[in-house]
Length: 393
Image 1 (spheres, rainbow, N blue to C red):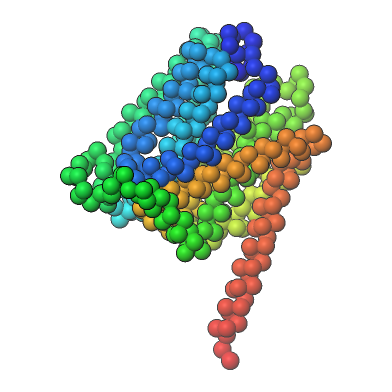
Image 2 (cartoon, rainbow, N blue to C red; image 1 turned 180 degrees about the vertical axis):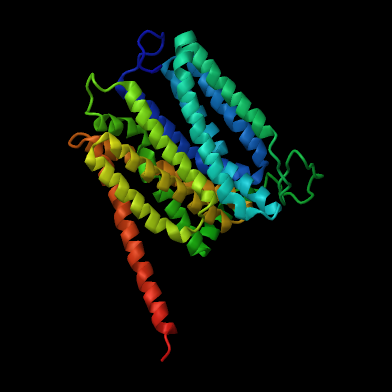
């Protein structure tokens, strides 16, 4: 809203300019994702989690107090850097702290709870935006966003962080040269990246899980277009379709996503991902093509299943990573997710010329349904082959 509002000095951008900002945001994220992952493996992960929101908040402050195209562009770059400082870092910190306590098996439960909390936060922030805009306009809403980033940094500063070999944290200050690598060594930084890539090369299961985590973000990347799908359920873009009605359907979908994330505390078997994703994709295809408001239940089920599968796949991936390069490898997954998102946005832009939201969501879900079916067939063949070998002669 701020970017396109002509009443705000420095704003009133054209659709092409706004699209350019989104492209800049995505490209910046792709560029900085892996380097920030290496930073998190090289230095204190907690410090990265503190710095991330502060960098993002600086971008929001530029938008709020100095709106202009250059400020918006700089803000998106800062947002990309701030988000990348947390992407991969939070998973690595949480998993390693649980592992140090002998409770790594609880990662899926905690990760699911974190994802659900994030979704609830988005719902709450969206609900608060309306009264804040009515009360003080973009300035108050922007100031609230900056304040939220500062509070996030303060909370992150209180997270526990155990010392890791070769890493200096705020809780340990080793003497120079004691268990650390010289930062001036030319291979000090590359060693971490090479170690992560070598681990993926030598661990086929970890590599497949990494690809699975990336692939599961395909439909999730289209959540920005969910309001258009909800609008089509209500009869299409017309005066009879109110923003309130669309928002209510969106809350139903968000609730399904939250429930799916929380379900990871009960069901954590990676073997169930294939069949579950197949059912979720089928539900999304059926609901989208039905085109009835009640179809929102199918959409909610689908996004709940996808959210659950993402948490379980991430937990299985973390189980197979080395602590020394955990954040780096997770950031590699983040790059893949961003590339998938860009492809999804481009596909939507191209497909929307000829198709409506329902058909586009159904087409997006189709690869999941086909892939899950193929996985189920292969698993069935392996099971029959194993049973035939074990059968008595």
